[in-house]
Image 1 (cartoon, one colour):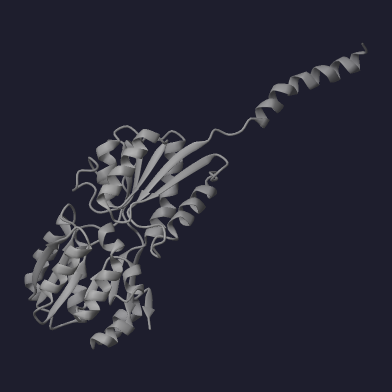
Image 2 (cartoon, rainbow, N blue to C red):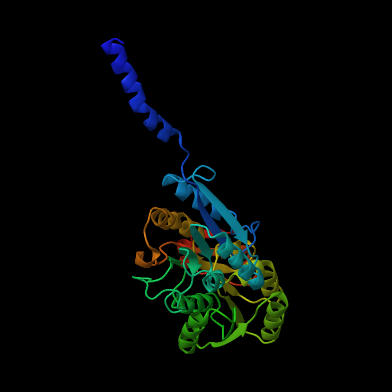
Length: 326
């Protein structure tokens, strides 16, 4: 064999392992996402796209090196628990828990799988993490509201309705205590008497609102929870029927006819959460990743609803609003 032929053959042999390695498929990683709403909910439709867009920018593509399993609990606590059990059996690389009740259900079933949460209220106060700076366990993520925002919701309602003397606060009995405490603290300075109603389903929501609406000068604050997002239409319609000016935690309520919404942009949190999912998939520990505070809020005002209620929305609120529905 001539020297040149031998060198050519040897060079070809040397490239075989490299070529074989290049042709090997990437390891498929698995992420489970459990959200408290329905997949068809207008407020949730953009979430998967925002999440997957963020992941794609970091090198993860659904079907190529990543499989994402979405589950939608439709505000049903029993369904949340059932899906949490399913994820524990499935043992994905990461679970993404969307909302406080969902995280409660997930943490009851999952102790070692990393968890990235989205839209969770007061995670340190609720005991989900040891501290915001150093979560310390298998969960970290993105908080949606600090309890102090409860006072801002009440102040906003009072500004819209100066004659307000009573306010009903709809809450999930298992969550929202920090918001209620803040509202109770701020209320005396505004001359308002708050009344919290713990409700778990649509019939209890109806009874609470109809019981409260029997006297004048009342308003409504709806706390963030999948129960209320799932029954958004019921709440907004009852508020209109009883002419109750209402403040809601998410834009979708105002888009469906609610008076005003002030809250976190959850699409932005889904997009940001892709970074934590990427870092954990590449070896980071959730115990060392600090909980992120919300940095993008939305104020949405529905002027059609204000007109129907006979409310004149102050000009400065319209000017600072992210969206005015006319």
